[in-house]
Structure formats: structure tokens, C-alpha cells
Length: 332
Ligand SMILES: [Zn+2]
Ligand SMILES: [Zn+2]
Image (cartoon, rainbow, N blue to C red; front, side, top):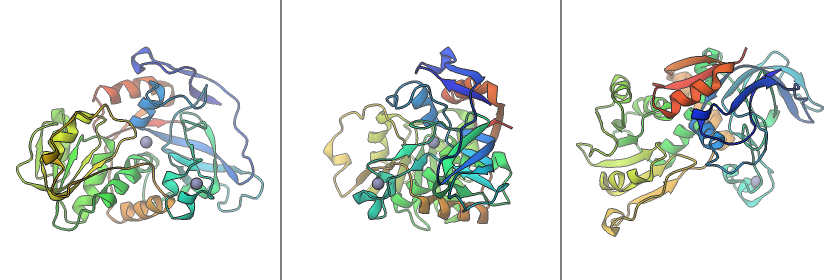
């Protein structure tokens, strides 16, 4: 099969992925083999490819927002029929035995595997995944619309949940890429008033089109005090201005897997029971709940499609803010 393979981490401007022939993987016990239709490009892929996340498998095929068709079943796999359309997310598997798994926090598992990082992912024509960790894709979503839901969507949904935001509340997004442009649709569906602080006029315009009541620069002060804020941009310097925008007891959620250092700030910004918390991965329950809500709304993503062999170009466009919404690779 064809795949875009990372042999050693490097800046994406060096075009580090090599488009080459590799063997089709074989499904092990409990796994399904998927023929990949599309794979979303996520900011986490940038962190893997540029080495901000320490290499865990090399070479590795990145990509963890995979939509594919079940082509073969490993021994004992019987959850899906051949021909079913399913999605593979970032959380590839957990040990299901550690204290976190046993207490409903499998997103924090001590021994997880991650798609496109510790195991090969979806910048390819085929992939294998444990059947217990893949999602049926609601029929109403075309392939390329489903891909951005699988990480940007699910993680954004978990961020919304952990922000504690309620109907009629005020919420700001810092950074308005793939995750925020999906999460705003859920927030609006819940009757939340949304503010968007983000660099780039394109992203600000998209936020307003999707129902934000205000859009400004990344560290600009929103015109109202907020119940909650979510930082999707990997920029630690946004933490103090985001805290400053919160009401007493407001919650600041950090949605990224990687962030530049957070500058020191005055305790007054945190005092009055303001909360900062990170979000790590997601549980399968988050994914199932989100896909149901996404189909109800229904979520519409702004998608830019790239051929599989142009993965380097997609990553460069993402890094330089030239993707408005979500980038998706066409792998078929
Ligand atoms: Zn575990
Ligand atoms: Zn992701």
C-alpha cells in the first residue's frame, strides 16, 4: 500500500513525510483491517512530526482521524461486518486494568496506545485497530465531514464538558482552528454565548459566521466576563489573558496535548476560585456521546481536501494558519 511515513522528526517545512510503499498491516486478534477513505490532519500530528512529542515508534505513519471501511476481521473480531464504515480516533487502546480504566477515566490510562504515534495511523491506504476502540460513523456524514469529528470534534466536546458551561453561559475560545470550529456548533446548540479570540482575519470571520457574538485578536479582552474559556492554541502566553477574562469561579480549560511554557502571573488572576485544568485524550463514552450530538445538530465542518501524497503540504498549511477549518487527506 501507499503511505506517508515519518522516518525521523523534523520541521514540516523540510517536508519530512516520505510517500512510499509499505506492507498492508494484518489484523491481530480483536482487530479490524480498514481500507481508509480519508484521514483528518490534526495539530497533534504536527507535534508528533516535529518531535515536540518524544518519538515512540520509528518509522511511524501519522494520522488519527481515520474514516475507513472494514475489509477484514482478525481472530475473534465480530463487532462489525465487512463493509461497515467506522472511525479510528487518537486513543487506539488502553490496558483496561489500571486504576484509571477501572474508574471511568480510560483517557488517563497508564498503558495506552495512540493512533499515528505509538502505532501506525491513517496517512495510508490501510490501517488496523482494535474493534472495541473504533466508532460506527453516523450515515448522515460524508467521509470527509466525519474525519474532523474524530479528534478535533471529540476533544473539543470533552473540553466543553469539563468547562462546565451551561445554557445561557458565556464561553471564549482562544485559537479558532478545527476543534473550535466544531465546538462552537455544539456550544450554540446548547444556547451558549461564544466569544472567539484568535489570530488571523479568516479565523475571526469563520467564528462570526458560525455564531460567535464577538471575535478579536488572540490576546484581546472579550467585551464581557466569561463563565469559561478553552485554549486550543498551543500558546502558553494566552493563559494570563484568558484568566483575566474569567468571572469569579470561572474555568479555564487547556485543550492541547502540547503547549509552550506558561509565563508567571499574579495570583490575583487565579484567586476567587478560578480553575485551570488540562484535557487529555478522551474516553470512548465521550466519542459515542459526541457523535450522537453531532448527527443531531448536525455539525458541518469546513473541510479542505488534499491527496494523500500531499500530506506535507497539508501540514505546512495547517502550521501557517492557511487552513480555515479542517484539513483532510483523501486516501482512497
Ligand atoms: Zn488503563
Ligand atoms: Zn488530534
